[in-house]
Image (tube, rainbow, N blue to C red; front, top):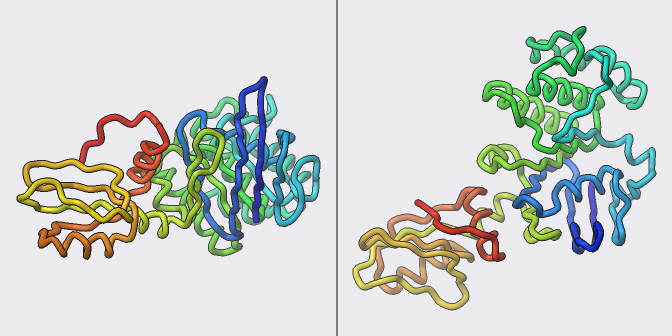
Length: 299
């Protein structure tokens, strides 16, 4: 669906994007994560055709995006900083969207209205709360029936019940129409429940891009009861972090968890547990290995 190749962008000598390579498969929910200043928003603005790249290519279903009306008709975009016309209410914005998106589904619009009972569709949207404005944006974007939905902090400002409802509607639409979703989001625990592919961005590059299952399978937390000091692993395993409480050692290990377990078992160590890390923990340790400021990690 999306293919980004060697994308570069500089602002007054600062390289915001420094050779980004990215691939988002059709029907995937792709989570784009990274520290502040990593270049996520700049990358999204290139994918949506807002910025012209200094170098590299951005292709949406094989077509360039920048100044391409046909390509832009294929996606909807919900930015973190929403915009509505000054005096517009929800129904007026609906008519505006209908004029842009030929596939806008009016029946779906009225069917989804019951999921947003707090929104007065005749009230000026700018007078609604930030959370309600986000609900309107999501409601309209889904009804555009896009092939690609791009979200920047999509549920920021929503209460827990509405957050769950938004994700439920989104996943239902993905399952029904094979819509592709690209979402940039800081809440990694929440993102872990919905995305199936992850791209970790740092200093203007995509450092890691994998399916969530592969990513979680490549880094593991191993807890070991050991009476003879810190356990050691063969050189083919990269130990990202080790800590201990008494005789129980906790190791964050990059590599096949089963092979690591077998290697440790050969030394007659009693392994307490082998666990996959959460997306949040993976992010912390990957960023720690990239000179990111990570100090004390508590288990």
